Length: 238
Image 1: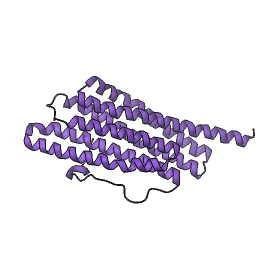
Image 2: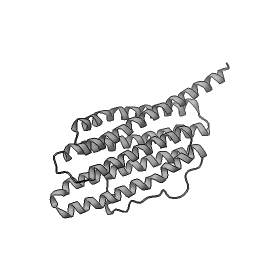
Image 3: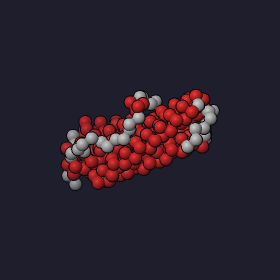
Image 4: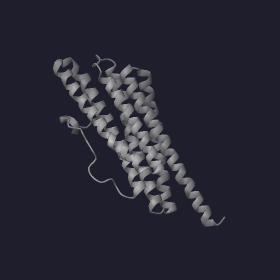
């Protein structure tokens, strides 16, 4: 084995390790999102606290992926296609870290909402949204690892479904607030949660777009399909 072959083999192992870390991070984020939504619907504070505690592991993986990616760029001088993979991994890790934060924030708001009257059907809708986003994340990551542009395009198209569910829930929450001022506080918390889940869908779509660029070398053409038409859509959800 020549020294050059040894270096190439070592570099390939480094790339595989980077992808493996990204897949693990995605699995943790998917679990956090679904469990946070389940805790919200069932008012399970033990589960909510577990989601909050496990966010540290997601953050640690984000740091590791970015450190390893920076090392690969600095020390390995990757070619164009490999550089796209490294950069896509860094961007995907950032998106996953944000979704992990959304799950943690949902769990934190569950603490407060557990003391308030339930808003009928709202938590169930959030749970369904969260499950759909988790599937989008898993498939977007699969598309990224396999360089599957067709699967990535499917994921990108499904963001519209999340937007439509968010819009429907937003209108329902407005109705509940108009019916009784006593519902306003709970509805505001639920709106922030729903908005964060909708944004999690945006991040899943972003990972899918990274997969398309990685597979084809060309960024997706045209505007991303959106159906968020709510008045408050531009407000920051924390």
